[in-house]
View 1 (cartoon, one colour):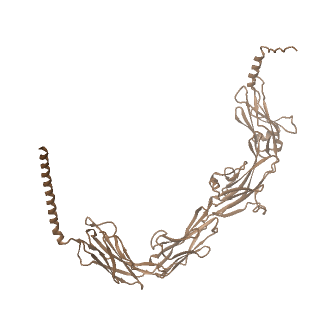
View 2 (view 1 turned 90 degrees about the horizontal axis):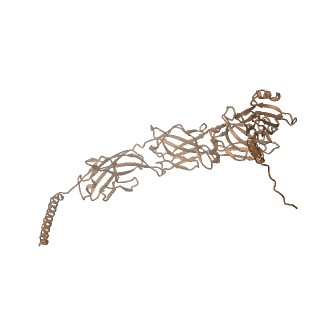
View 3 (view 1 turned 30 degrees about the vertical axis):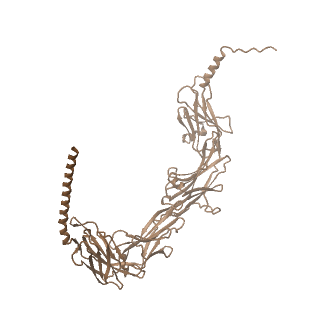
Length: 613
């Protein structure tokens, strides 16, 4: 067996191969989507086409043809970028009407658009590009199959129950209270033979506004990939759990909007879109339908909340009980899961502007509390009926006279237990008059002895006279001082030195000199203040402030009257003997200082001479 000899190539063959490869790089290629494409009758379809590797002008022309299944060899001219008379009779009217058109994206790319697909539009679509090349190389057309599916997508409002009655022909009108849940259902199904996905969304439009993509605001929807997303205004509520969307069964979708707000009113729609995956892996929407679910009205709490009070203008005596009733009315949701209420009473003195200060209230949990200044009094705030609240003061005082108003607040619950105030209302003013006790007090104070010296005890007496008042009236008296600064009384308020309360218990304040203080009752209507070991810091202007107190059956005290005595000046004088000691002490001090200075000087000079020697 002989050895094989290598085969030698002709010298011109490599050059020929290079020329062929070079010419292949410039071959024309027309690109259309990979098929088959599935679309639904009655919907729009767009088929793109672009050309590459061509010679000639940058703007290429395109011609579209259709090969129907019943005549696969017959090309029907649809539309052209060059010839306006290109269309065959079967497409002429649709092209003139703009239902079928070719739109240029750029010089070498176009898209064929059919607005309303028909069953006879199924077939092979060819995109042809007339040659502008110097050589006929590559492909001059591309083909893609389009299959038209019947429209089997169905959308309707879901019946009220799992097996309830069919939805009425006309959309129902629903009314929900602010803060309550709004629940709407939608049925969406398809029987398309191909594998498709449904995307279902709930939207809202302003009442009486035309429905369209520009007027329909998406609330929440399930995308084709089963992700749940909300429209921009509702994203926060979806994240907070106030907005929910779920699928029940195979074709039922349910949206729940928690804590309905005034802005949630409108006409609600359900939109179902059918999606299919094209051969290139992208998803295309092939059908969409919309159904009206309901016209929703949100009854705001502010438009319904009303407050009335009774029983009318009241006139009572001191110590008598005071009862006031407050009724909250209106078409309101019951307190509980979605709504909560608080009720309180406010009082303003007669002639004072504004609603006044809080007396008592019941919060949203039914817990009562008293306002500032009412602590320690026997006051009850309670709910006596479903919407009736009672304020009771066991023993009224003259200071309780004024104008009373009942304040009711309505809250709605957000996610969890979070409450949001939605409305508030005040009742008309209710005048309450409490008869004065008619107690008149007068006080006279003086310094016993008239003059007081340092180191002694200063005794200040205060006699109190009383006119009027009920039996069992108790008296209290307190002593106050104002300190002089630079010969004038200080602008600082008077300082309590001490006193005796209506229960006979002494109360000590702060004495300017810091020494011991005693307060005592020296007679039925006479009080005494004693400042022991008087010092210069005790200088000041003192006065006595008596007050009359009445105790009611509930053991509470109230002040029925007060008075203030005239000023009593306390100036601690120095004794005469003390004034004689002053020069002596001064002279002795000067002599001692002078002697010490002379002695120090002599000693210093003597020590210097001693060191020199």
